[in-house]
Image 1 (cartoon, rainbow, N blue to C red):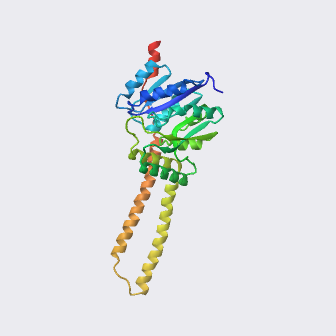
Image 2: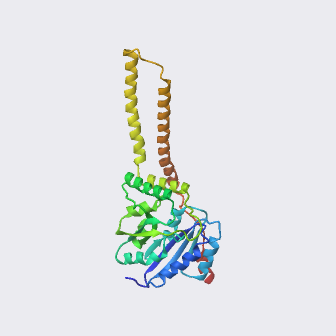
Image 3: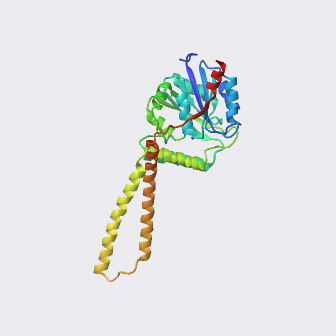
Length: 319
């Protein structure tokens, strides 16, 4: 039941969002003030190069409910989310982006589902205003491919706008792999889950930082983190080609020994070499992706490190 004793943590990773933060902060305050909860608003600055850190410092000084964690460099959206979840103290934690595409007015809906007993409340985009058909198509294809290749079923249209109960957050903190695909991790973590659909509005200001290159890296992390199918696919292709080469070798021997039809076959040989060489390189590349991830994991380096905790500095200054 809602109570001032229940603390809600709202975790917001930001990267070069100087034009969005003030508006986002005010919308969150407007959504949370009528509710019977105490809350903290945790911004994680993911190595911004604009005025974002200075705006966050101003908000921290103006509102004791605001915390600002300044990362030492850009670690990426998923690691920034992890940082926020590591530092959240709430009985429930809501993660969301600060560009207004995750509407703050939905916060009461997520909390209402939590009050019903759900421990994971996942929002699902049924549409995004102003998004290109290419991004919508590639996003849909990624989820279909991911779900076809993996035992972990990720909700199509699922976003990083979700509520997690404290018990779920405690379990999540034990997952420390570097190739982080949080949507898959939350889908696989269990507990009592539900969904809320929404239409994502346009960004309030600025351009999306999620470029095509970042999208491809994100998709590759998701597939390799939860599926061994690419490795098996390369293995099956190798078996099929090996069997085909045996059949072809038998055909060549038959032509050479029992017929007079043997002719120079440089074109066929060249095409075969190129095909087999290309497939071998592709297989090595797939193996290399997995080996590279093993290499990153065994180094056991920290996922991130902070340049400053502005809220901690404020508290020290008040002592």
